[in-house]
Image (cartoon, one colour):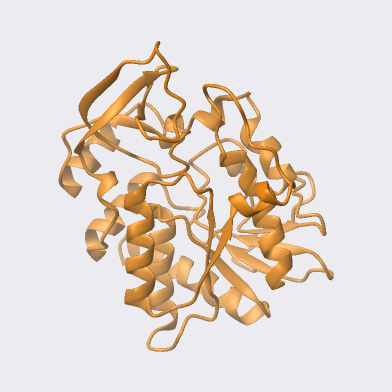
Length: 296
């Protein structure tokens, strides 16, 4: 077995532990490469049977159209259940207030929609594609990460995980966030995608796009981005290393149209993929603060 076989076996084991320990789990699906990898691993873990959980997408309404098209195609191919929680519903209900200003984004508003969706459907475990190498706060997570009855995370109150023994016991109202690829790196994910020939949304590969230079990053010149007279729209060859809300996800200049090209770019990069997420730069502890509030 090579290292990808070991990572795959561990992730499949964790997915099966979730199915065995929890009554009503869900797989959080963003349309990004990590959640797509999780879906592929779930196929290996549970096919030819159906998945023991639905796919859940928290939709900001400001997504890349390529991501939504891919999501709908994949769900149709899988013939699995998709649940969509809409941030717009949270805004309409007055539960969150949409940000104003040039750098306004709906990304942070997902927390309320996620917690409401968990409560509505009674999910006791939510599987996600977070990895420890992405960001400092995520490096503090256990693979089974308990959230209290308010959906909040306390980094100081986590359970030991010895010898791959995972404790899913929770009290009523609590839930567990589960990270099967926590021990993977960005490069591991791309090498696995190449080995398994996993299809991805087209925005992960180099393409021509109108972009705006803002806060030291190339942002997609989409209708959701508040563009003013100071912004200069340029047409460039770019790709995206990470997929999130279109208003906070930056592109990188690239001519990588093949997986080998992308892998070579990542090996040479000195910036993590989360470096292209503007919402992580609000403060030094931006991600940790959001996670404590219930963000995935």
